[in-house]
Length: 292
Ligand code: AHM
Ligand code: MG
Image (tube, rainbow, N blue to C red; front, side, top):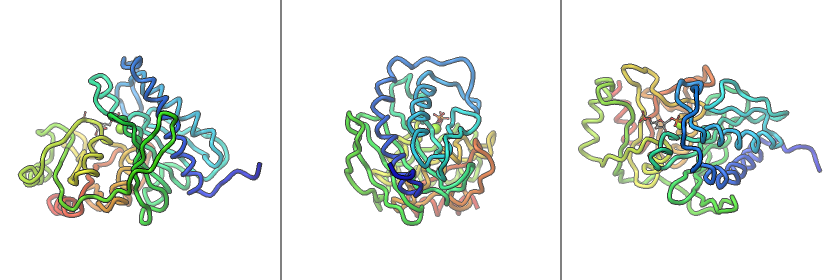
């Protein structure tokens, strides 16, 4: 055996392979883990047995890879030191896990950063997600955010990923989905919604990855905006905002905090939240104009 591979992009490929290889086991473990546990995650949310199960599986599989020095997850207060290596992996083990109780889709989100956490989106060397829908798929890219190509894969029962297609946002957007309660939306965001709901069809299912997958497939806009009660919204920069911005921008779309690309948002904490708006260029440009 040679020296551990520490080229960040090679390590990132291995991380994506590993997330795909664990996906069938994550999926197989869901039916018996639909109950809530005592306690909350670091973001103050209820935790399902499935959240902990997926987090443990991913931590041991990803943490064992050469070149991965840090594993962090939405379900853990602190990052875990997993050995030598330049790469940090930030995971949302089960995005949209409240959908488990109602049997709707969920995902696993993965962000691979070159360097320590918290990191900015420009430090990403890969990002993507697994979607546990009617089929298990992976959408991901490797490389600097400005250079990546986003591909969709099917994940086989053996945990192999087979490339299906390169993703490019359709030019003619058709869907939108926005999180938060309507009375909690700031007036400028509500005015934007008034505009786009005349043009697009509502598609909101409560799992970011599944809702973003609608936008990737049909074109449109997904947002979990700033709220009156939560000025940074709900979604977390390291685990959700950055990877989803990487995927949408890599597929020819745009991301915004409301004021520029999510990938340029300064990283201030492992569990920091960020307003997330992603979609077709024109729809995000209009959003930024509306938010002034
Ligand atoms: P989670 O990662 O703990 O599941 O929380 C994030 C999820 C996102 O997938 C989704 O966009 C959002 O929370 C839905 O929130 P809400 O139930 O407020 O619509
Ligand atoms: Mg999530």
